[in-house]
Image (cartoon, rainbow, N blue to C red):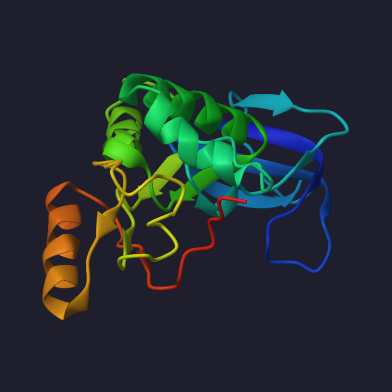
Length: 201
């Protein structure tokens, strides 16, 4: 057990931040949050004073692709890195990006599509304590229709890219594709039925 004392704590329950507040932590759980004057602490408890800092709950980003940096203007670069970089490099990038977001205060990420199930592997490595990182909820390969948003038109017809996206049409193909993702251990199924937004211009 230990306590954290901060100038301000945002607990998500009050309209304003608690000033001069204390957080009591037992094991991996927060046991109590309140004004320092009202929180009773055992005499031998370790108190970590973070001074004038503000403490708030971990943030959640509900739409990331853990293997990619996520620049909005880099659609071509995002697609091409999946065919020019090895699966190992994509996985290492996922670890680095996960740690970067964790250090920015995001303790949970929902990763909605990664080639070769690198998001599943990273989630499992974090859960097993092999590497550090945020909590991950992952979808493995996103599912899309032929010509859908995730079935981009960046490549010539004779170019085949496998292991990147689950392409499925109609109810039976989509059921089978969803079952394949579940077999691989995903937390959620991502389905994108919209037409492609990729352009070769």
